Amino acid sequence: MRRSTLVLAALLLSGGGGALADGVGARSSANCCYAPTWSGVYAGFQAGGAWGDTGWSFPFAESFNTLPGQRFSVSPDGALVGAQLGVNQQFGGILLGGELAFAGTDWHETLTGPATFPQDRFKTAISNLLTVTARAGVPFGDHLLYGKAGYANGNVALGAASGPPVPDITANVSHREDGWTAGVGWEYRIGRSLVFGIEYDYVEFSGSRFTTTTGGALAGAPFSVDLESLHMQAVTARLSILLDRSPTASTK
Image 1 (cartoon, rainbow, N blue to C red):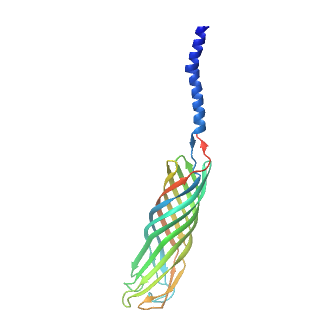
Image 2: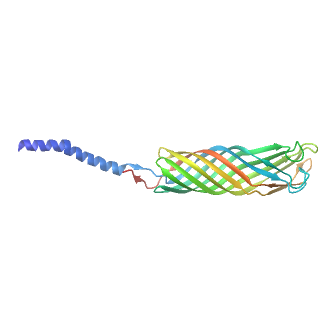
Image 3: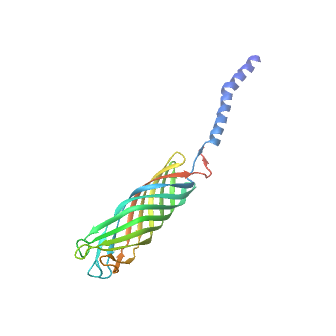
């Protein structure tokens, strides 16, 4: 009897006790170890490059052209730097969200002599870009693939400066253009809160008529340009902080 009692105690301390410890450990692992979701508010910065195309058309014979309907094409490019603020909500294997982004850009091109006079200069530029978009994506572990689409608004500026035979005539006009944008992207979580991503975006503005008066050597003369549909593409790198405050799911 005494020997049986000692054997039973040894079994409890080794095998049975180990099983109990394993059971407690398993319950602890199941109940305390969680995988964060992509749900939450995020904010960060972005930087990259942009390129695109549009065209100028002169509706009237004015200071920089001799015939109505004269036109030329431009292909601006440049850098952009900005910030984004958004919110994600993950529903199982689907992510839905929205984002507000604003970027300052150096997207421009200056052409010399594309119209009537060979030394006239014409500049096309977008100085900043605002987008409001909806996002939908598929998260898998620390990675997220997503698409986005929504509203775009940009400050478009046109400028002209004449050369001979009548130099130093100038014209500058700008206003905000409305349009739309769509894009795709990939994001990777570095730890729980830091998110790195690469994004491609397409932006289109329908174009409109820009009008002002000239300055310099011929002040007060009319200046009119019909800016054609403006297409812009951009590739940016993004870095965001995700404030993950949503309920999380067990990994077990």
